[in-house]
Image 1 (cartoon, rainbow, N blue to C red):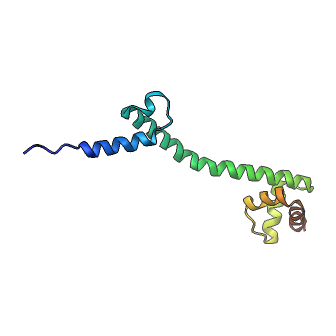
Image 2 (image 1 turned 60 degrees about the horizontal axis):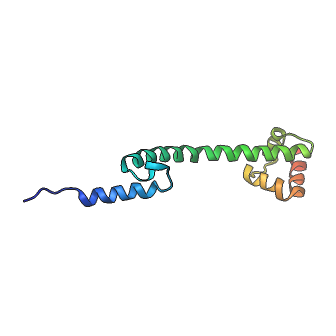
Image 3 (image 1 turned 30 degrees about the vertical axis):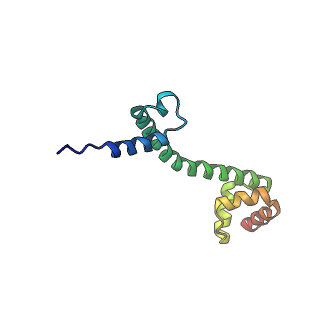
Length: 115
């Protein structure tokens, strides 16, 4: 009886890896061995940058809120402290959207926070 070889299993695994490696430069998209390395590295970056993205967006929102707060005669930290004391629980994403799209509402929030 012939031994069982992993022909189909290997082919499926190779195809899966090479499909993920489309668009990589040179042998990175054609050679299985290179594609595995590129995929592994890419997955590490994807994981790391999913975490990083959250940090970057929060920093962007803080910058926008600070700029809008300064237009209303206060600073970011005073505004956030005032909002907490006033019991207004809007997150930074919403505050930055308000600062961009509805300046009047943001000004009203600033006045509330400064009381």
